[in-house]
Length: 314
Image 1: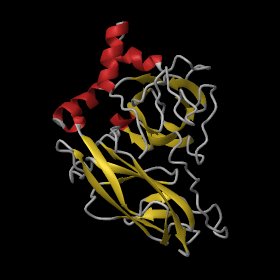
Image 2: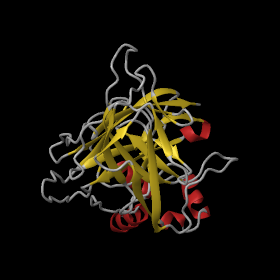
Image 3: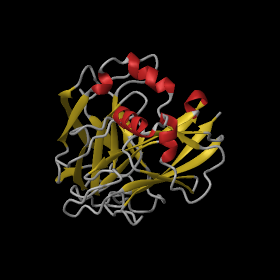
């Protein structure tokens, strides 16, 4: 299994604050010091909002949990007769009460992020039942999974992230329709043209090389949810410490560079989420890249540079 370096937000904030006498907000803004241009008007990075901190307190020990996932199906490097693919997971580890499940009133809760190839994730709330991907195109695919909190912040402990690559064969997927979950949520868009032959959108991922997995932001943000928009991701096979390390073919020290609406917002040298505040209503793009010490994207299946479009409604 891939090796990850675990960095907790509370440890980093406490350590840097003690050493430098800075506030959490200043720590977040320090991540943007390398920006080459002015950030989009009014968009600034900040540390964990008080609202999220209060939610964490109400959850007791859950946020200190170390959930471990195992992908039971599909098997890594297996061949699946499509077009439907079932994902089955096993959850273990030091859970401290953590368990996926949706609150029927709020429609939120702990869940698993499921990513097909490099498409936006879908939330998986009931792991007692298989998560079915329907209308999956023939070809090579990759599934990535990791546990998440109700506000979509990922757990970053050893064993939380899992990945398998598999091949769909003779599935006869309908190229005019998207890949969806069993309840109809889109996992991957259809081919550009109904007449086009649907093919895999999965790149060939080397499980031993540094890999960036985009998680948030995603989709539409309304009202209070649009005030502070979290940027979160998963890093495997490397770390983001400024001193870095070089192990085997690891080309790091690495960093994550991010852009908002095409504007360079700087680089992140810590594996923590940040929150972006000040978006105007409308559509916006978020781009993240895992880069080497020379500012070049580290190639791995095309997944280490990802752009998503979000919509802000106020």
